Amino acid sequence: MKRYLILEDGTVFPGEGFGSSAITTGQLVVSNNRTGIEQSVTDPDAEGQIIAFTLPGIGSSGINRDFYESINYKCKGIVVGSTSAESVDNSIPFEEWVTSMNIPGIKNVDVRALSKYIFEHGEMKASIMDTHDEHAIDQIKALVLPSDLVKQVSTKQSYPNPNIGLKMVIIDLGLKYSILRQLSYRDCNSIIVNYNTTPEQVASLHPDGVIFSNGPGDPKDLPKVLENIKVLQKQFPILGIGLGSLLVAMANDCQITQLTKPHHESSLPVKEVASGKIDFVNHNHSYTIDQKSIGSSDFIVTDICVSDGSIEGIRHEYLPIISVLFEPEAAPGPTDGYYVFDEFIDLINSIKQQDWSR
Amino acid sequence: MAKEIIDGQTMTRALTRITYEIIERNKGIEDLVLVGIKTRGVFVAHRIESRLKQLENISIPVGELDITPYRDDVSADEKEKDVHEFKAEPLDFDVTNKHVILTDDVLYTGRTIRAAMDALMKSGRPKKISLAVLVDRGHRELPIRADFVGKNIPTSQREKIKVSMKEIDGEDKVEIE
Image 1 (cartoon, one colour):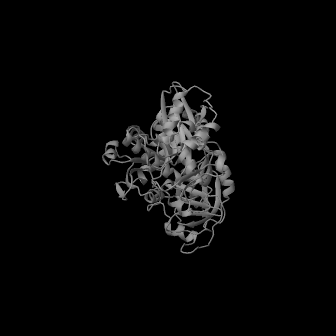
Image 2 (image 1 turned 90 degrees about the horizontal axis):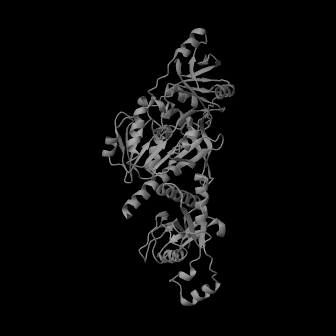
Image 3 (image 1 turned 180 degrees about the vertical axis):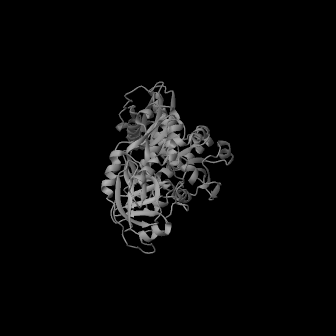
């Protein structure tokens, strides 16, 4: 069935529908992921997003249903150039999977032209529809995207991920399960709480460290979380990931800007400033920390993106705060970034040792 | 049989972490000087210095300390031999009123560190001396502890810890045997 991807400025990309036949709208995100499609689509960051995958033969590595990053996936739509009917081992073919997930998809779209267009004009709203008449274009123009994405994905109720090691409280802004997997691997005793949990409630859980997770949307929509960070960072070691790291930066007077070329790629190189070491890590963010504002803050830049020089990791000079904009838990992508979790645990342990020996 | 317990990547990470901790706990790096204990402590000092330079864009002095004549854990014969070979190389900067960070590869009995402090005191009066080591293996014989530790490795006294560093051994690793 012929369907159309319509951008908010009226540009139309024709294609063929697959998956759900519902009309859908959302923020269009261009992703260069080749593998781990199931991880990208089930990532809570995809809340309210239509994801356009630029590489051909999407699904050729199979869809593994053991690799989900959330149960209640909220991806609004999938745009691809071509798909693959391949199914590997216990996986299911891509198109069949999209249908089973009830997500609208559109294929045979000129994704190269689309991604070029987006890089030139910036990220915008988009819609997958059956027609592309004036009425349809007016509709997408008039659409206001929700600004409470985090509220939609954050857990309503606290829940534990019990283990025997350090106690982590995770502020769920759109938590990916792979963060929990990495913490479980390191024996961390985690408690996951709603994003609006007060600092007093967090403190009453007596954590060794507090983690602000990844999540969807604009960090400027979450002023209350900023206030909470300001209180919590004086009491506990903090790790910020993705959206969480942007909030940590904002809480310490850094400015946030939009990337001209957003990072949605499972394998983008990042350089550790101190040692010059290069890691390939998963990125999924449209915002970055303003280079100028970091100079006057108490942060030092620990990691930069090699391809465009944007800030990817910061660390507070005096307080135990580590913050990375990329996604150290990978899923999808190479696992080079796992060390961030080790670093956070080392940081907590060294503080404990210091306190003890004093 | 030697068993590798720290690989190159972990060592790199440990040194980077020590660097962050030095920045954190000193509220900036003014007044800092690094003094490495020969041989591998010097390389540790240089690596920390290069990281500080990358991160803070400030170059801080690095000194080398030969503590052979101050040691109390070598036999008299050996010491005599060493003393003859030893040429007093004073630090080429003044440590008075500086915060000195002593660096070494392994912290064991603490006797090396005591000797290093003796040597350091001879050349001035530092405001403060801190200690950064790559590996703390325990079994202290003196009341000394490290302020910055790359990795705590509990050992028995029968075991040996061997640190290799790229600059002199061709690769980065720590082995136990």
